[in-house]
Length: 263
Image 1 (cartoon, one colour):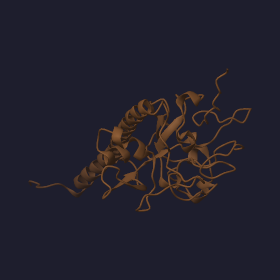
Image 2 (tube, one colour):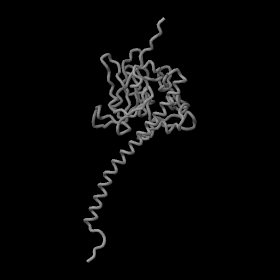
Image 3 (cartoon, one colour):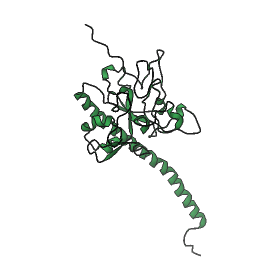
Image 4 (cartoon, one colour):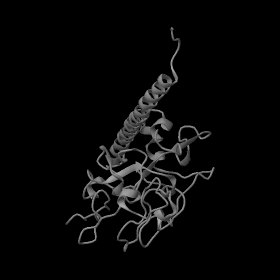
């Protein structure tokens, strides 16, 4: 007697085989997507680095402003109430589309800082990258380790313009380094270290631990260093380390006091 079609057992075997293949392909697909997004994000940072380099040529080897501020250090805003950030300094030097260069493709918020488009005030841009505020308008020669110092990194909005929580990780999402242990927004003569750091999210079931810090990308945080090169760093960079003299160790550093020329 001839048998047509598949038996129930054969159908189950095929279904199991298909599920096994899918179980293998889905993680592989996600890994490939993450690799592509990481590469695109790094490309954004390289374009930003080129723009900053051109800015420095016109402004005495000085880094851009992290944000425009009032005399008391509080952030300035435009007529729409949006923050005036470092993007305003370098927008004229970025050759590609601004929105494409300023939004990380892996940013789950699609860019959490909303700013006015410097090229068209009727439009807005979303920003995925945070500027390490202590390096605002700093000259490279005043940095002890420009090649090891992070200037810009994947970040959320809080450190650009938002809450000023001295314990940023306790509330979950927060922004890039902006505050000092004794002052908000800008250091005083007595400031010793930075207390605000960049972080995307943290698990609510644990405290602040090195393996509990997350980033946009699977392998870590994409960063632009002060000397212009781009790298991916593990999320544990968010933990501040100091040497025996209390100075911040790389990748977080503060500019050295400018030495006056001797007569």
